[in-house]
Image (cartoon, rainbow over all chains, first blue to last red; front, side):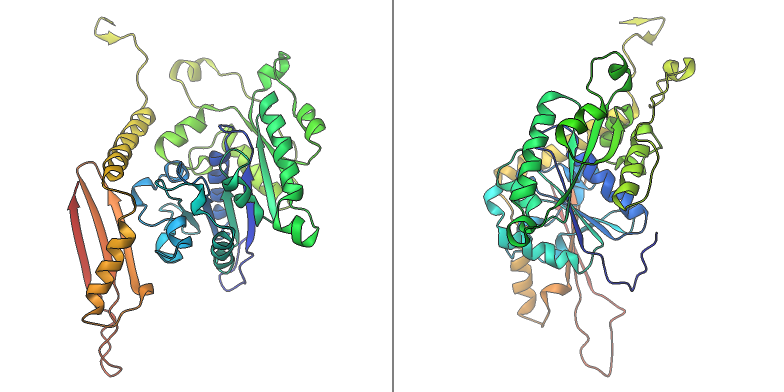
Length: 280
Length: 104
């Protein structure tokens, strides 16, 4: 699955969206982008959350931001100047957004122009959507070829995901101009098998029955997620964990590979890992 | 509270300290930048380019600006590729480097 250097870039745009905030969009966008880059696809991850940027922190490049997505849209900087190359993977890039302006700084024409320029250089363009269904979220999904809807097995998250799936079916370029669909798949995060076994949490099947879209993957609740964000490391580049394996499997499915089983059963912590607090 | 010299409070893990340090550095910059007015970097870039253009011909693509923010010192590195004087004597290997340091 390696991408030859002289090959035409794939130029595929994937939006990571959810409706509800705090379900793991940015963590997932960083993990999916890094997992694609690990497979030698040239990948860029873009922060669409204007005014509340956080992708730079999750990716660990917050001290290196000079120019951003908004500067490029407004012609104040070249795309080349705003792209930050990841220090760990040379196939991974990040396009940060502005911390000082608001969503009105995004224009449909501006976003399209930047995405078209990125498509000429990158295999995968991962758009990290802001929460909500307002302008920023709509523009993040508008030019997408595919969508990953991040959902927690919890009532408000599933309800908001349903709303976002409705928007993906109607308010995208594909839907408006070509009458085509944006392929949407759900990524269930913060999955806790012990709570499901106790009857306290909806199962994956419950969530899929309600949303009626294919399942991309399941990310178990894991202490490794907080650790990775503390140090600014996409989870798939950190020490292996149940969560990182969940993202690797999700990306394999995103690439059309057959992967068995969705949920890695959380092991009961052994005596020593309980004593020393080894990451789950 | 400590018992025989051991703290009973849970020990702070290394990654939590990293998180706090990163936030403190970042927020110190964001708070001070906020008072200076937003986004002076594009204006700074335009000014620097205008000054250099008074003396030589350069393209906007040939300017590379990088920043590294640290606790006490931030460095702003501006690399400008200056075209060789003529086709008969290429000097492309020796890129002039301008480095500006600003104390924050």
